[in-house]
Image (tube, rainbow over all chains, first blue to last red):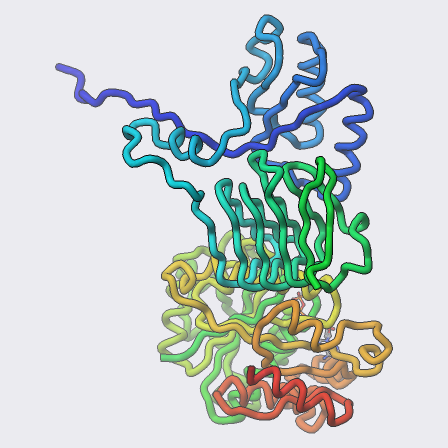
Length: 233
Length: 271
Ligand SMILES: Nc1ncnc2c1ncn2[C@@H]1O[C@H](COP(=O)(O)OP(=O)(O)OP(=O)(O)O)[C@@H](O)[C@H]1O
Ligand SMILES: [Mg+2]
C-alpha cells in the first residue's frame, strides 16, 4: 500500500520578540544587579524567551554552561546565544543566533518569508490603539511601532512597545518603549505613578522617579542612554 | 429570561458572600424571583449567611454530575418565598465543576428565575472563572484599600477576556460595590477615598456599604443583613444598591458624611 500522505513537509521561518541580556564583567556583579531587578519584579521573565548576548564577556564553554544554569535557577530560560565563539558551543548549550536589532520593516519581511516582497515596505510601522484601560495582570506587547492607550494602565499591568508609548490616563504599571533597540522612543503619560519606565532596556523603577513628578503629566526619553523625565506642564 | 450576576473580587474576605445574600434578599423582597448560587466549592459559606445550613441535601456538584435534579438541590428561603439557594459542596473536589456542567445549570436557572446571583470564590483560578463565565453582569466588591483595589482591577480585566460574553465580542456590564467603608478612617487618610477608588477602577458605582457591626450580627443569626436589620446603615445601602440594579436611579450617599460629597459623587456617577 502506498503511503497515504503525499503532503510535503513545510518549515516556515518566523520571528519572535525576545528579551536580550548582555552580561558584563564582573559577572558576579551583573548577576547581583539582575537579582535586585528580579526582587522588584518577581517572575517577570518567567515563560518569556531570553537571548544571551555574550559580546561583552569572554567565556569558555564551562563558563557559559554555568551562566545559563544560573539564569535557569532564577526562572529565566535562555533560548539562544549571541556573540559567543562557535567553537565553544555544543549540544548542552542553546544554539547560536545571528541576530541584531532589526527595524520593523525588516521584521515584517522576516515574518512572512514565503511571500515575495510586494509593495515597498510601509514607511511607518503600524501603531496600536488600545481604547480601554489596561487592567492589572494584562500585558500589551507590540514589537513594532507605537502604542496609545485611551485610559489608565493599572498597577501590575504592562505595555511593551517597539516604538513610543502614549497613555491618555494614569500610568500605574510598567511601560517599556523602544523595545527592539530604539533609543529614540519616548514614553508619555497624563499622570505618572509608574512602577517602572524603560526605554531600549534602560530603566527606572518607582523609587528612582522623582516624587515631585507623581500625579503629573510627563515624558521620558533617553539622552546618551540616561533616562530623562520631564513634566509636560 | 432572567439576568445572571456574578459577585466577584479577586481578593478574599472583602464581602462577596455578604453581598450576594443581601442583594438576593433585597431583590426578593421587591417581589422578584431570585436564586443565589454558591460557587465556593470546599469553603461554602452562603448557606450559613442565609441560615439554611441544616437543610442542605444536594448541591451544585451533585446537579452537575447528574446525581440530583436541580429542583432537588434548590432550597427555598423560610422568610421569603421567591428567594432560593443553590448550595456548594463542602466536601467535594473543586475539579468536579466543569465548564459544560456550569453552562447547563446556569441556562436552566436563567429560565426559572428573574435573577441568578453567583457568589464567586476568592482568587483568579478556575472556580472564580467558572463563576463569572456565563454572567451577563458583574458586581465587583472592593474594600477601599490598595490591595483590594488592585485585585479588582485584575478581575475586571478577566471579566473582559474570560467570560462567554467577552469571547463573543460583547461586553459584560460591570458595577462597582465598595464595602466596609469607614468614614472616620477615610477622613483620617487610613483608607483610600471613594474618589481614589473610582479613579483607579473607572467603573460605575453601584453603592457604598458602610463597615457595620450589623453585618456580623446578621450572619450570626443566619439572615442576610437586608432582612435581619433593614434599617441599619448596611441594610439600607444594600437595599438601595438592589434598586439601582433594577434600573432605578437613586442619589449615591456616602455613609456618615456631610452633604458636599454627595453631589460630587452623584455628578461623577452620571458622567
Ligand atoms: N460591611 C461590613 N461591615 C462589617 N463586616 C463585614 C462587612 N461586610 C463583610 N463583613 C465581614 O467580613 C467577613 C468576610 O465577609 P464575606 O464572607 O462576605 O467575604 P467574602 O468576600 O465572601 O470572603 P471569601 O473570599 O472568603 O469568600 C465576614 O466576617 C463578614 O461578616
Ligand atoms: Mg465568600
